[in-house]
Length: 150
Image (cartoon, rainbow, N blue to C red; front, side, top):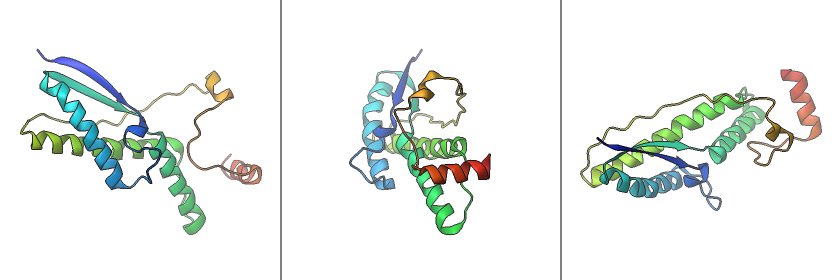
C-alpha cells in the first residue's frame, strides 16, 4: 500500500519575487518543483499538492483592473479570480509534473481539482491585513467603487 504525503506550495514557489511572472518563468519553477516531488513518488508515496496563489491572483486582479479602465471589461470578484488562478496553477503543476514523469519514464495519474474556501468575515485577521492582493485604490476610487457595487 502506498504512503500519502501532502505537500503545500506557496504561491511564490511558482512565481518568485524577482520575476515578472511570465508563463515561461512559472513553468520552469513548476518543473524544478516537480523534480523534487518525484522523489516522493519514487519512494512509493502518493502525493496531494496544495498551493497558494497570492502573486497569481494579485496579477489577475491587476489585469482585471487594467481591462476595466482601458476597455470597460467588467471586473471579476475575488472568488472568481481565485478560481481562475487555481485552474491555471493546477494546470501548470500537472503539466510540468507530467513532463518530469515522462522524462523519467514513470507512469502516474495526475488530477487537478479546483476547490472553494469558506472565509469567516469576522476573522480577526481582517482587522490588520498583512498580505495585500491586487490593486490599490485611492480613497476616492474606493468610495466610487463602493457606491457602484454596493
